[in-house]
Length: 198
Image 1 (cartoon, helix red, strand yellow):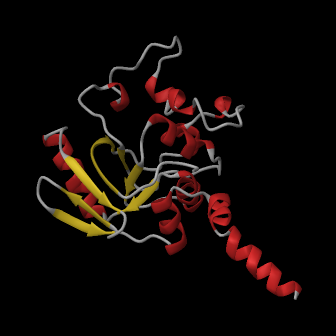
Image 2: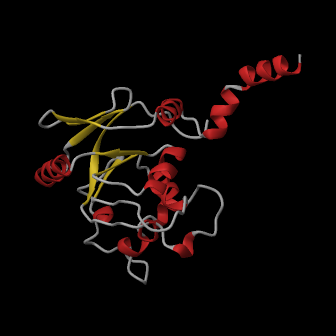
Image 3: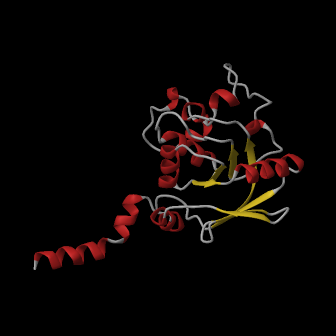
């Protein structure tokens, strides 16, 4: 299996109310040498998280013990910039399974779906409500229900539906990447190939 199956995620959330977060901010270019998906979480938002001497910047949200969880709530136009897959890898490797925003860059969105990070697009109004709730109480939980395609602010019961491509939804529910999807169909492929020969 390529990654953990995604079904229903209930978690506190990390607020990052910054617009136009690009992939170079998510994972700076100097950390792109590796080809495996491991170890990138340590350098997620590296230049925002750490000073040049390696000490943590106390004012950055990932260094604030009040905020934690498997959901990152980002500002509008999250994941813009270059097409590096490593940005999604870093988010997954850090332990985040879902990113919520009012708008995602397409390439980042697809890269995330390919490796098991669910990008959930909500209205700007609902995004503002989520930030308000987390600000009032960092223990506020969100529930992301992939089968029903809903996201709920559990404190208030406010809910929105989100869109996802059917193929990507199937893969997320099963923990498949594109290769796993084909592997799961190998018997059908084999039987089709046999029929074509005869």
